[in-house]
Image 1: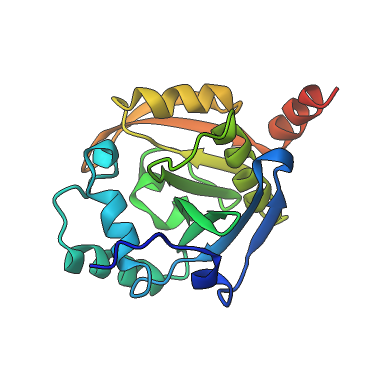
Image 2 (image 1 turned 60 degrees about the vertical axis):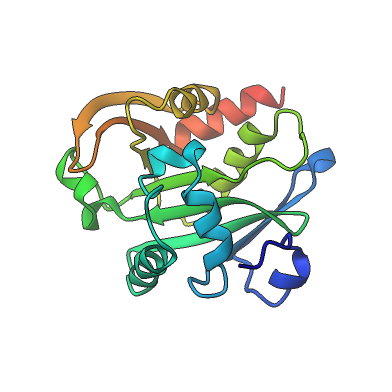
Length: 202
């Protein structure tokens, strides 16, 4: 397996769906995930114990490839890599709740978008990086004028994820039972995000 660190040379020809300057923290690029080209990288991330709430720690490379090939075939679900100055730092997925089992557990709307985020093992400390990165991902999702609300549903036992939601102005909703977990719903509307961003920049 190729364990050499990925650099921007690997992704320079990949289409960029969003880019954002995080000032002293670097530049973020969001690029579509390639199930085949990114398999070693993603398999290495999702099978670590730190990623146990992702639900794929026991997956083989073939299992991971099958999952992301399936997602790639859908028009309603999308997988991306997030790069910081060319280095992959996160696996990011979006979906339409009306076309996902989550949408059966709450009153989903066409204006909703769901997201999943798996941060890569850190290779260098970047102070206060995660909230700023999440804000960039939110900017990307709200760049679609048809989207008015972001929905997340982390495992209710995932204390780090729940803390992160509070740090990025999500409002907690009810707990719901999904096939693979008890999940904590949380929501962020476009209006709330704009209001909290305005408060931060005063």
